[in-house]
View 1 (cartoon, rainbow, N blue to C red):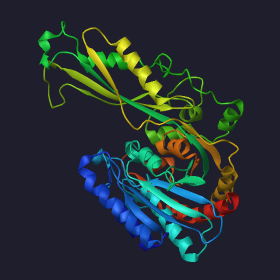
View 2 (view 1 turned 60 degrees about the vertical axis):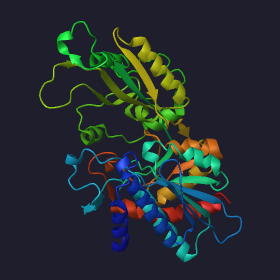
View 3 (view 1 turned 90 degrees about the vertical axis):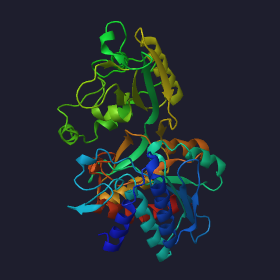
View 4 (view 1 turned 45 degrees about the horizontal axis):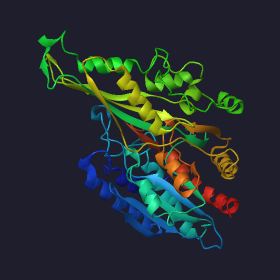
Amino acid sequence: MADQKHLEEFMEFLSIPSVSALPDHKDDMRRAAAWLADRMKRAGIDGVEIIETKGHPVVFGRKEAPVANAPTVLIYGHYDTQPADPLNEWVSEPFKPEIRDGKIYARGSSDDKGGVFPAILAAEEVIGRGELTVNLEFLFEGEEEIGSPNLKELLIARKEDFKSDLVVSVDGGMYSVDTPSLTVGCRGLAAVQIEVTGPRTDIHSGQGGNIANPIQALAQILAGMKGPDGTILIEGFYEDVAEPSPMEKEAMATVPFDEEAVKDQAGVPALFGEPGYSPVERIWVRPTLDPNGIWGGFQGEGIKTIIPSKASCKITCRLVPHQEPDKICKLIEEHVKRNAPTGVTVTVKSFPGSSRPYVVPGDHPVLPVMTKVLRELYGKDPVVNRLGGTLPIARAFLDILGTYLVFFAMSSPDSGAHGPNEFFRVEEFDRLRTGLPKLWAELGKALK
């Protein structure tokens, strides 16, 4: 059980509103980086530095094992969080942590301060006992929640500093609170913003009937991107998608998936998605296209009789092997321009921070090691899975450093990451803190 001192430290870390997406929290980001660097130094980690980037800083440190020819393992995580909106749906304040029913409630508790802080505690304990059998490096970034736009450049510039035999991400999670998972990949990401412009300025709606309405035009464009069954209709979108092998489909069919529990957790009457694929296949090996936000026109109380000048939306796509983000963004742009109604002009802007899909080879030597450690921690074999979301840096480590990344993080799907009332279970905190030393010990033998 986590001792009170460690929980109090964790809650102090959680109380820093390190929201990378919001400029108002720039000073909080630096405060969180400084807190992290200081705690790493006190844990006995050497060479701790706060590395400046064009955006928020990276915190780095290392500790060499007192044994010859030890392999090097880099621990990756992030200290930035998502914004806390909508605030009115939180039971307690997002940056005033509370423990209720064995759960630590706070923004960032699960994603990913609950990965970062236990990793430091694990290192502190192993260093203190003199039992470190791998060289450890720690790279904690402050921009994961905005797509890691500056980390790739840093990896290139300081390639030798970050060289390792394996990257272990403490960002991610397990299949459920009592079912471990061996995560072998994640989907990629592409993001665009569409802007539809009609009249030069907002005009009186008495002009309706002669002037195209940008909101209506945008709704038509969006409606044409998907069929009623969820199939994406953008020409060429599925062209490069790698279908799962029969063996992969067979393995996915054995994954325990509770459809009723998923519906209940999401609060929806039914699951929905591309036909011909199971729910597990749809979130692991099939691509998506989702509008994330839409706006235009009058947003205040009551009525304002106008035809708005502009309407806009943001769209993100989760990508699978072998889709390329740049190509997907281009296909979306071509679709929008081809299907724009008469009377409006459209622009499509791609966002930075895109990421290619990522998969660990099935014969990688670390997978049996991970299976062994997870079996010991949970008392059962892990489910082999992929993340439905994206960890952009996973592909960057492979492309830039030639190093594979594996996920070793304990949060559960019900933790509310990115939503209101996010939490991290105390038992998950303990499991990660005690599990990492076991993993490092096994890696010391397997990678030597």
